[in-house]
Length: 408
Image (cartoon, rainbow, N blue to C red):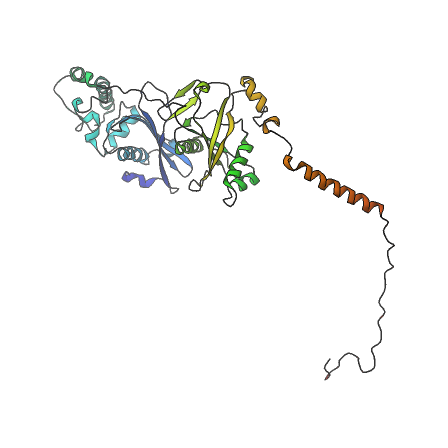
């Protein structure tokens, strides 16, 4: 951390590195580095990571106004260098505020900054022409605002920028996009739930059967209400990270505790695959209608207690559905199985009557109870005896209550 980070508030600083789910022409992996102070997002660094982990392109570094001028931007940038200790770093071009911040920032590894090294060393990762353009822009910013900009570290050369960039432009090696196949592996999606107190207490009670608790969660949410506005990930941890990201950036008002639930889906059949936007490790379904799926596992935990995670397997898998965007876009099969609120209809449950397999036994017990009640109603009650009043009798001679000096 930078030395000036000591001026941050006493609530404590937390750094969180997570996936940045963004669709761009750049086929690199998106990453967020988020800083939180207490329960507030204080700053964020967005960047792309080369698939081999040896090159980073910084996209945006921003700090919330309430936490500016406290060294937080330096903390985030230092953490980026620490998270990728051998990677080339491309900072791109800077705004006025960015140039002024950079002027006072002490870069931990300037030898890994592509602006400070000849293109022959990094040109396979970055387009040399683009880098040359960014360097020219930053130089102009520094001159315009009278900044040094660490110019002694910037690579110096005798040729013009255009000439050297053209020499190395052909060395750039574009990356082939990698997209997840929804039918190739299980997928994991998260939902954030505020449960009624009784349901919350039950599903988080470790003394109860985990499969029954998982079934109760699914019943509470509704089998036809699996999250639509969510990315479905190749790992359970990434789904939990999505829920945590929503907690940070879409905070609920103070109230009951939030439960994060992750649903694991069996690989989708090729015939059922809808239109989707896929990234390297996640997919977002674009089809506006519902999507029938099989839930094979459930994992859940309280948002403020991530170390206590509950888990249950379903064998056989439970039939469910990702909700349609609107009731009008639901399929006929969905409407036949689920009501307008996404809950199973009685017919879909097989038999809506509880204890159906014990119907005859329950009926016989009820009839015996009714017969006994009728017999008691026909039998007259005996007259009640008048209350009796006890009359005290005088004690026999020599048997009076013990007095002083006598033993009973």
